[in-house]
Image (cartoon, rainbow, N blue to C red; front, top):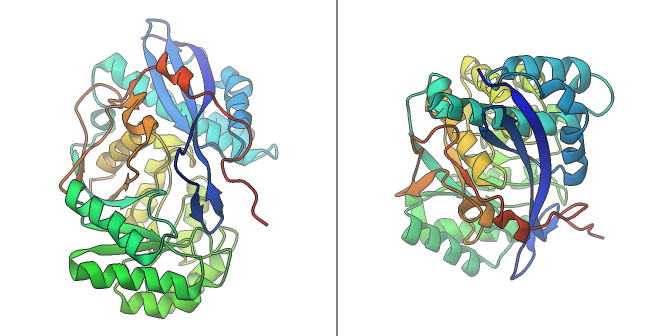
Amino acid sequence: MPRITALDARVVSYRFDDRPRPLSLGSALRRDVVLVRVVCEDGTVGYGESFHGHAGTAVAEIVNSTMREVVVGREPYETVDVNRETFDRFVLSAGMSGGFLLALSGIDIAMWDAWGKVRGEPVYRLLGGSVTDFALYGGGFTLGFQPPDELAGEVRRMRERLGWRAVKLRIGDSPERDLARVRHVREVFGDELSIMVDANLGHRYDVARVAPALAELGVEWLEEPYPPGSPARFAALRARGLVPVAAGENLGGAHEFADWIDRGALDVVQPDVSRVGGITEALRIAALARAAGLRFAPHISHSALNHAATLHLLSAAGGAGIFEADGTVENPFRDGVLRGGPVLADGRASLPARPGLGVLVDEEALGRYPGERGSPFPRTR
C-alpha cells in the first residue's frame, strides 16, 4: 500500500468582480480557499479544502509545518489515527485548537480523496454509503441584503434556470428590512418555495425578536441567531417552539456538538467538513444527530472539494440529509480550476462515480488565483 510522501497547502483567492457581498458580519470581497494536497509514493495525489478561518496563510502554515510530522509516512486510509493524534496533541490542548482543526479538516479530506483513487472507488463507497442523489437548497453569498425585488429576482433565477425549490435567505440587517425581504419572497413564490434564513451570528440585533414573524411566514429554520459561545441562548429560543434552530458551522469537533445536543440547543445540526476535522469527524457528528433524532444539514465552504466531500458524507450518513448548494453564478473554485463535483439539476444534487472525491484540480491554472493575506471580510466600523 503506498505511503504518503508529501503534504502541502496553499491559499488561492478569487475577488468578486462586481460588488462586495454584504452580510451581518461584514461584506465579503473575495473567496479564499486553503487547498491541501497529499502525495503518495505511487504518484497518487489527493486534494482537500481547509476553511481559511480569516487567516488562510496561517492555516496553510500549520499544514506545511507541524502537521507534516503527523501525516507523512502514513498510508492514506489512516484517517482515524491522524484524527486521534491531532486531537490528542493539538486540538484539545496547546492553545491553537481552531487552527489545527481547520488544518486537520483539509488533510482528512485529501487523505480520503487519495485513498479512493488508490482503490479506484468513490469515497462514499469506502464509507459504506450507497445513496448518490440528494435534496438541496440554494445558499451562498448571492442571497444577501438586496432590495426585496432584486432578491426575488435572484431566487427566480435559481428556480427557473436551476430548478431549485428551496433557498436560504440572509437576515441580521434590521428587523424591518429582514422581514420585508422574507415576506416579499414568500408572497412572490408562495408555498411552492421552502425558505430557510441565516442570521450569521446575529451581530446587529437580537434576532429572536423576529422569530414569531418568521414562524408565521413558514420559515423552515433559523440559522445562527447568536454567536457560538452561547448555547443557552440557542436552547432558550428553541424552547419557545417558534421556528427550528440551526447551527454548527462555527462549532468544533464532535465533543462540542455532543454538548450542544445535550443542552437541547439544536434542531438542525450543521457541521462543515472543512472546519470540524474533515469527513472522519463529521461522520461522528452525523451519528450524534441521528441518535438524537435531529435533522442533519451540513454547512458548505467555497470549493468543489468541500461540496463533493459533503455529499460523500451525506451518503455515508444514510442519505437523509439536505445539501447546501452554492447559488452564485460565477465561482471558479466550483466549476473552473476546480470542477467535477456535485451535479446540480432539478432541485437535486448527485455524485459522480469517479474515484476519490471525483473533483478535478487544474494546478497550472490555479496560478491565476494567487492567495491573499488576511481576512476576506474587511473590518466594518
